[in-house]
Image 1 (cartoon, helix red, strand yellow):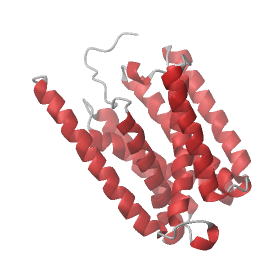
Image 2: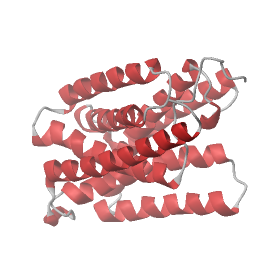
Image 3: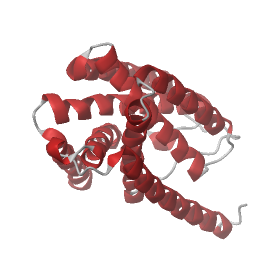
Length: 256
């Protein structure tokens, strides 16, 4: 599949820093989503509508952009994460699906999107996204994977009996295993990428719960406001670093 002459990749390089920022953004998505739906008592349905609207606005800006802008890209990631948090909670709690069934429904939806993407464009490699259609598939997969990750994280933390910290440790170990597999095996890089992408969301969800929940529930009692503020500052610093690095690379290449 050849790239369109007018299309420039608008996705970041998949590096260690990318994964750190992804975990930070998904953890912030968990705490910020809970801040709206629970701390501010807006409710899951209204919060989902509000945050999904923010996702649509940010996605429209991303799709309209002509090149990669770190702040815009990570804004879309953040809005998929916050919207995913409240959508998952609405499905699992308000609609009464429960974490296991909710996770199964979302996993099925994700597999359908990935299958359709692969059937339509021939590849799931994010490095080969070369047109708007492929980018739309990419963001649909991300939104659902982040929603799935919330449900899966809640299942591990609550229904499994592992607790918030136990769930974070289990998922963290799985992510580490994927990293090792990437380094020492020839397992499909596309498969490993999407496994890591999905699992960083429940890791962020359980880590967010560790930060926000009270001591008697196994958390550190930082609250949704304090945790969201700290995570937001960290993410902004990392995005600024990414922006400066990209700017230096463009100047070195004689681009503006």
